[in-house]
Image (cartoon, rainbow, N blue to C red; front, side, top):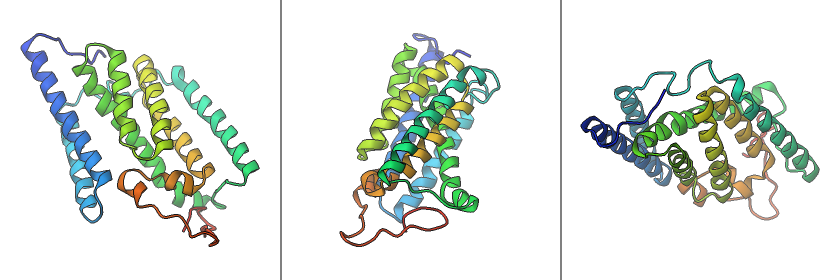
Length: 238
């Protein structure tokens, strides 16, 4: 499951050029999407999704190469366990600081975080199966590809400082774990655990409700003295 191409050969050069074009266009569309206001943002979202899907199909390396396999699952389960410990600590701190925001029903959890969980899976695929896969073809060293993939992944979360730092740390860890174990399932689970934990323990005004790009800049917290309204079912800010 070696993703590198042979440098110096015609096939290698063509493969690198294709990987570079796919990477630049895909990442450019994603960045444009998070920085464009609605309603144009919706069109860019669909353009990004179509480009990612199309370029994944014509450069499809196989499911196993992208980490959708049973092998490496047990070997990488420690990442899920570590995320659970970190999340438990964050919950304990949030309870003490009275910043915990959680839904009160199972339906509330599904409504509030079901969609985010699916989105966290998609993000992990983008990091490992799209960005890292192409950077492994562009760069001669796997370590450089891993760090670069994590860096551009984190940059897509600007200007949210907390999310940018967290995603840089997580992205770097995830890329190196992936290179060793080549299993994306555990990384998806870890991403979901950490993301939901961050959202329910850090106050919305601090993290701007997990927004990035233009959404972060346009976030408006409740007026001073005005109580923050919380949906009793989902625990999310109204």
